[in-house]
Length: 570
Image (cartoon, rainbow, N blue to C red; front, side, top):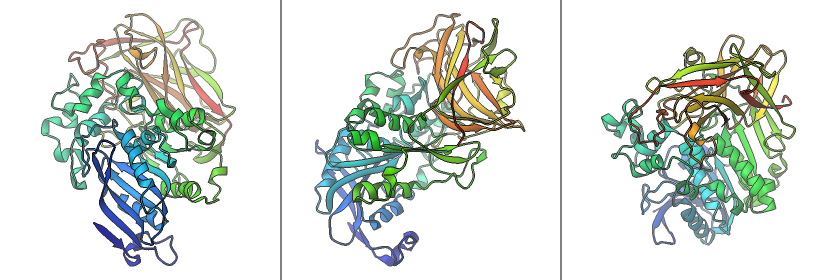
């Protein structure tokens, strides 16, 4: 079916066109045949005027009429692009079986090459979209399609195990259940049915299912049960890991994300991976990254914090500049900008940088000390703190890197309520006398022991304001059995002390004078992550829990420390 949109019908998106937007044509339900004969269906938006145009492709599991996408596609077509919005295999109109992540590389490649030879195409193709739509871009690019010119993955993972389904070896329970087990198995057409409660059986609701043990449940979607079975970074995950194939990608990529997005690590790893391992000098040199104070989409206010009017950035405007340069040859200066643009929280300022981590970063340890203190001096003596972790009474999720239909609010949130708990250890610096700017990956080196075979270590970096408001800045978790690597499981010896290295992705924040730096340490963050039952059993298999006795050391011999990436103030 073909629809022609005349100028008069597009007033909502005509502000940037002095004489009104040009007319476009929409060809709906266009079949694109994959190499195995399966037909995937797309809507094709293109200028009504005959000619050959550059092509933009976005591939979605959510439906081609979803949310505001229709308007965006029209706007791109009005700017001189053929825009293809395609249902991925097994979703909505497209044929085939829905297997999350597992067919996107081949299908994306085939769609790009199909688009390049259509009569309305000039042979230059780029991809766009965020979240799952960003993953489909990385997957397709990893196949090195000949006609791909560039990609722009926003708020996207680059490794479905490391920074989507799991993080630090811990299962992202609330997101995986809400997105993977409830929402995605359904071929629902109308947006009004997308809310989880609309089609989740009564006994599948969050408050019941998330606390159910064992986690594996035969009634849940097969792919969700597979995620639970493959609890380490094994071949099941490596097969679909985009970061394992950065060396195949020949074209520049622009990543885009937020400090509180669930896929922050993917945004950063996509940029650093391309800069280090891209297949061509151009791919390595010209890839870029933007990170703002956002969650799973740009906003001025997120969580409890209003980051000011400068915090917003238009993803659409940035994409259009990028495509105009790479697909139309427009000299708009985007290629000459420094490759990294990040937002510094605390002072609410944007800054360009030559790379990530920022050149000249000074990795500075702050040591845990007796009495809940945190400082730059190494501790003396043989001090330690202890707490009890009960999986039946976990520390609740308050803010952080979460999103997408989960029952918790993500972003920067006041941590004081959970800091009152006996199972949360807090270590706080003296008030600062001058600003301390950090930007880069944050790492915790924790000397600790437990009386069981396995447990979790959850760490948060906190900016404590003079009035006591405790804002989470960065967070990380490590399932102790993965201390030697996410592909190497080894249970603990009860009572033995280990040095655990806990990665906290990244951040950019200025701790202002009068503020204090705090590190919170605990063993749970529920329901964002599943509860470690402390039994040593495989994920999803344990119906039992045991209370764990945890010991954190901060001594001369065992100096637990958080390593901050200190930089010059913006």
